[in-house]
Amino acid sequence: MIKKNIKFSIAIDGSSASGKTTGSKIISKKFNFKLLSSGRLYRYLAYKIINNKNRYDKKFIINQSKNINLNKLKDKRLYSLEVTKLASIIAKKKYIRNALKQFQINFIKKNKKVIIEGRDIGSKIMPKADLKIFFKCSVKQKAKRRLKEFKKINKNITLKEVEKSLNLRDFSDKNRKESPLLFVKGAVLVDTTKLTIKQMELKLVKLVKQRLLNKYGNI
Image 1 (spheres, one colour):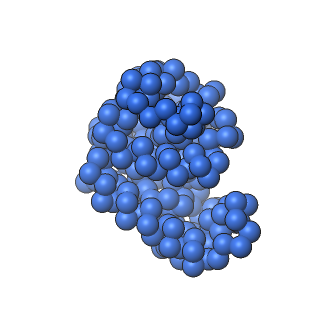
Image 2 (cartoon, rainbow, N blue to C red):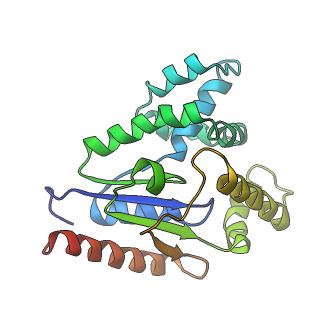
């Protein structure tokens, strides 16, 4: 536990299934940081579009983005296959990214100790974060991690099919025009390919403690 008056921000980026969400939760719990997973914002808008007869107009989407709150982002329905697919598509739209950027900025302003994880956090949302972490993992290992999750949707899916899906998502994230996935200057690379969750925790806790000490001395 660290002092309540400390102000510290952490930007976490990484590809799908790289361990960034798990890592973010570890840091949040260990140091009592407020955590926002930016991907849920896009899932929320995708869900609203689908449940309003695929209403895909700019005015509707921007209005919906203004009505988001943290409780709404906890809805399990945001993780349906249909929502997942549409969220990936709308995340490429500049006006949608701009609309959701304000929610993230407000989240940072409201909390002294904050973590946001996603794919453009260190470059676009928190360029001045006290700590930037970039997660990576081999595609084969990511596919193994995601296979169980994909099996819930399609029992017949194979490891190779999951690997192909992840490769396509990674390519799309890295090459999209708006806010592509980038390793930004000053970020700390965390390769989780061969790390257990416990090893990841030890590595992340050590990293955060060191940055906190560098900024505040005794915490």
